[in-house]
Length: 246
Image (cartoon, rainbow, N blue to C red; front, side, top):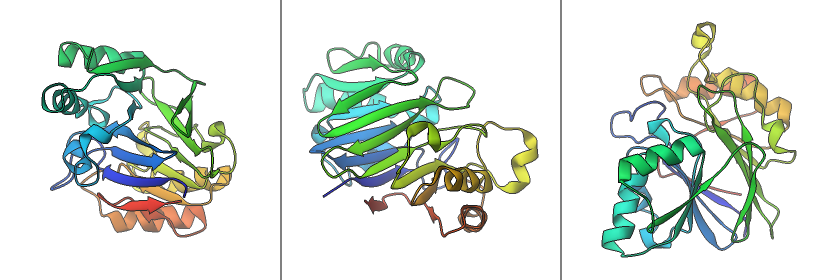
């Protein structure tokens, strides 16, 4: 069995009505890894996994819609489970904010700084990181199941000018932010439209495209239409609590 991805939240910027911000559960290689943990995603995580079964957390950047539920996980581990030593990986900026907001992560959590080009192994998973084009240091991540060879890549937040190509070839599933629609492209925002995500993923040769991080006020169907036209094949729109197997 290869990788599986469960969406814990997929709203971009702020939680939409009844929704949650970016959070993803990646399972494979004998481990459970959380990638981003935005507002509301911790509650959804508990639909799928006991909190004590989390093996590691990866946070892509310091913007609050991608990480602030880490504070709830820290409380659960420290006072509910009375556990220590949970490995958390992220940029130095994110680590500094997490330390300030929690009053100190140790000994409950062990923080590991990440930067462009880093590679780590968690259980039977290999993770590679590449800096994107965003307002703050932001790291996209590729996750490979070493035994099965299946792979997924997550763009985190990025504007045009970055590509999944920076994470290598043969990506089975690309989880890509598509915050905006074609009508927003002229605004020069450092996020992708569904069209831009589709063009980039097609150029990078990814096998399957899953769009996430949509602005809550927009119609998800429009993202699917614009993304599919640009990708040249049907794309999927991330659904909270949806599971995607590789």
